[in-house]
Length: 354
Image: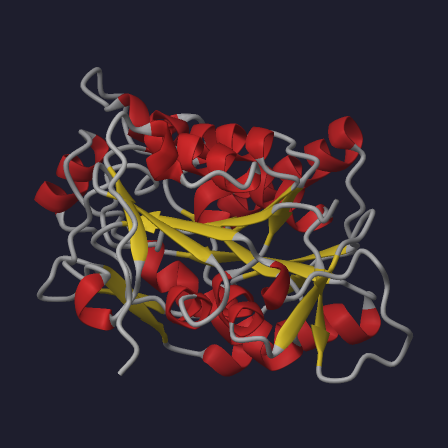
């Protein structure tokens, strides 16, 4: 029997009710991984700051790489492990960089992760944060060339097969918006900018990449939302990033130099995709909607944007919750039309030959 493959998408920086925080969509991913053979998802879903969970059948694929995969341009090749290179923004203060280095050493000593020597960019990356009229977050890199030069050194001289970037983000965030976010009511102010970093590296070098922000620790607050609590645990978000990258699949770009492997995954093997109902404009979802892939949209996971499937011509099964989406996946995997599980089934109609 062919393996059942599902993709779980929660776009970053759009204030998703589930998945808008560090790792709060991880319980959804854990549940979906139980009902499919292969789960493909992205760092925004699996990164839980200092928290992580090993899902043996989950594939950690950066957003730009996921778009290229869904379009059929790139394939995914599972690996046992990657040598992860660590790239630090020169703008990180020495003490804060030391905290991150200690987190990396802890990952080596306690988890056995294979890390290379690290590189510090030759100029500060100078991250700037922005917010669109819709409320979604985005950002810019003042010195993108320093990011690419550092990445190239890790690949060519340290033999890195995946790259973890730690960039210094400004501490002078919008106080009200940041507090709302910590209290469970806002949009992650840095998520959109983080995506810019990883997209640039993956697009340029075609290897896995994810980002961990460097921020000053905030004072304790008894009103923190449980969904935001993972981000309050320490000085670094690095552990979940390193765990994810250590087993992230490599990208098959163009014609591979070696023979195809039975474990290689291509877009035409994807059976189902799950997405928030108001965030259907992603490149990956648009590409998959033209394939033999069951699209499932979840109403309960509201976002700051309003891009439903219908105006885009995307045919989907609309469900209220991820619990209901799990039921649709189980039925689909079993070859059962979900409507057959309802007490009311409409009769067949005759089509007229014109």
